[in-house]
Length: 415
Image (cartoon, rainbow, N blue to C red; front, side, top):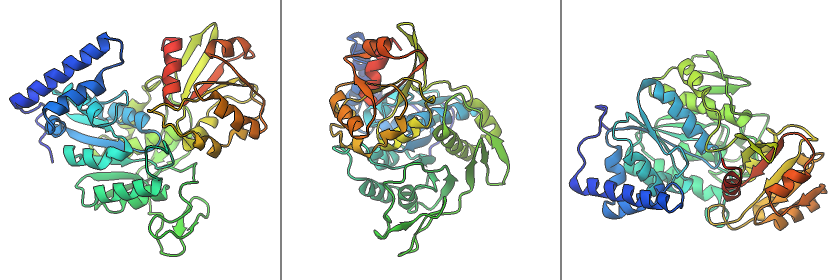
């Protein structure tokens, strides 16, 4: 495990040069208005010192967070909890591939903890580089179909990469794919965090047999692979710890999914010696995460910004929005960062929006329009957000967008 003397050991001249060059590249990128510069800065730094990520993590107690949904929010909640016992460095804005992670850690020489969100595809490699003390695995579901292999293969990759890891793995006992992936680890803390979206886990990841799902339980009738007994349990507005004590979850972030994120975060914090009460109290401070859940004012209207990138995320988001007749704006793009394949739209149950006035924008508004047409919903296709705001009936507008569409909206509303 890494040493924790509260400060970084001296970096080699090469590593120092790499960090300096990376920061310079990031500054140039920001000055040119090309975003935060964290990715280009990290790329430059890793070119000059390919082992830099590992070097920057040597003085840190690291936790890695990976999942299809909820990574950024959970990373933020864990970071808040761990600040109770020391300074934290984190890639809070979600640049979650090696370059972005390297950039984040380069700014954390005085930190004690590194709380790092990791893209699912890169988890095994980053875990190899940074020797984490803990790894949180929340869920696995279909996402970016053109880029990521199907979920079963991703679970297999995690399973191989985590095999024999010294890290404590904090894993969702309700997601069979996550359980399969985590089961190769010698030290797992199981959390009953729930699983709303089940369409990627009807066949057994161990043998391909059909999963039986009585109530909240699950098991394979053919090979005996089954849900492990959890030691942390999300129960309504409480999380039960391994001793059976119930701790209230008070969040400013909405929805059941965020309570699940908080339950997992409390289990992670406990690995680092932060008690549940302290961890959960600190999580209350988080009001929004990189713009998600923010309520902004736009053209005299209140607009709540919600991010949903894949079918599981849309399902959770539909349960958050105010009931009809609240107007809803949907925006979908299919750029590189979103995945260029929009066939996932057909996996989302849009009938849940029945009764809402629906407005559709984004690069792929016509793909979405066809999907809503088939779902027999009333909607209007608009040119832009301004038009939606003019046409929408009174009241707060709920805006649900996928990744780059969400960033587009944030630029328009100045958030």
